[in-house]
Amino acid sequence: MVAFVSDHDKAVEILAKLNLPTKPPPVTRARAPPRQEEMFDQAPATFAADPICPDA
Image (cartoon, rainbow, N blue to C red; front, top):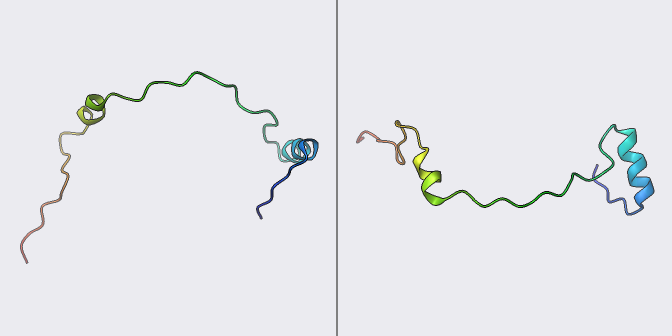
C-alpha cells in the first residue's frame, strides 16, 4: 500500500509506530564528483568491455 500523508503530526505518529526515524537526516555539504581519470583507473586487470565469442 502506498499513501501520501500530508498531516505532519499524523506522519510522525505513523513513523514512530513503525520504529522509523521521525526527523530528517542532517544536511551536509555536497562533495565533488569523482575525477574522470579515477573512475576508469579502477577497473580490474581482467576487465573486458566485450566478451570474446567463438565463431559459430
